[in-house]
Image 1 (tube, rainbow, N blue to C red):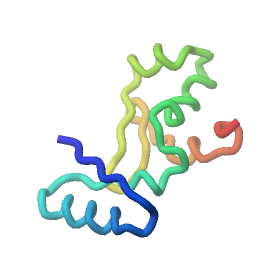
Image 2 (tube, one colour):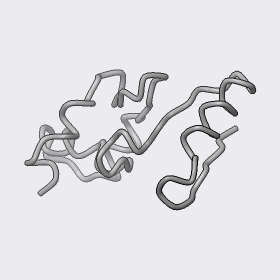
Image 3 (cartoon, one colour):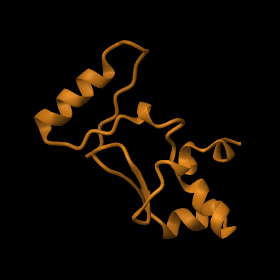
Image 4 (cartoon, rainbow, N blue to C red):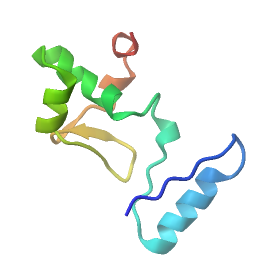
Amino acid sequence: MIVSIDGPAGAGKSTVASRLAERLDFRYLDTGRLPRPDLARAARPACRRQGARLSELAAANPVDFDEHGRCFIAGTDVTAAIRRAEIDR
């Protein structure tokens, strides 16, 4: 099950989400900790390395997040790579 909580800044989303995750024994991922935390952004480093289309790589390389908010593509930690300026461009 995936639970997403949305709302304005300062409304207590992170507090509610972390407490709910703890109570339900769910993994908590604070997407606000990652700059523009979408799957396309997470896959861009692999696209650049392999010269492939995003759709091809997405199908072959699962994206996952751990309980510490680190991002992995096909088991490789890409947390730092998705924060680089060249990926933003």
